Structure formats: C-alpha cells, structure tokens
Length: 142
Image (tube, rainbow, N blue to C red; front, side, top):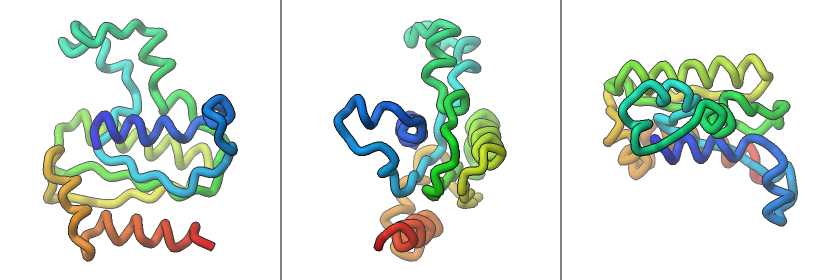
C-alpha cells in the first residue's frame, strides 16, 4: 500500500531479476494498493523538500514510465474510494497505461475505504481484495 504499491509495481519491469540472481519472468501476480506510480507530480510538492528527487530520478523511479511487454501475470490494482484525488488519479492512470500495454490488469473497487484502512480488508477472507488475489493465485498455480 502507498509506497508499497509503488514497490509492487516496480517488480514489473524486467532486468532486475537477472541482476539479483533470479530467473526472469517468474512473476506470478502483483497486488498494488494506493500506489505512487508516477513520481513526477511529487517534484512540485513540499514532500520533495525532504525526498530530494530530481526530474531524472522521478522518471527513472516511476513504474508508469517502465512498463514491460505484457507477461500474462495478473496485476490487481486498488485504491480506496475515500482517498485523495491524487491517489485515485495515480491508480487510474497506471491502470490505463497497463491496459494499453496489453497487461492483464484487474481493478478492484474499494469505494468505502481510505488510504489507511484498505490493507486491513486483506484480513477478511470474504473481502474483495482477498477474493481477487486468491483467484489470481489459483490461476497461476499449476
């Protein structure tokens, strides 16, 4: 969630697996919640005062700018309906970019949730996020 959503999305680009000694293409599924997928808007905020990103850094660290060829791995995206416009926009833009690149992107609507309680729904075995992730895992499990 949040920065974790960004990190989950950063597992999509290829190349890092080989550098880390892992087999490339082994990504099964991704669940990214309320992520920051384009860091460039942060350059214009007070957050960048302590983050210290340059324009080049922001672009290099933004998963929306480094989409690999579609792998077939399900990518589940969600953002709480009670989150800020910025978080909802980030998710919508990333979803559109993934879909345009041919990825199996699956939005999971969470209208009654905010930035802080969305992850807690994963503890509910009947929750929307849990069901969506379980379905994705079943699809990729031999």
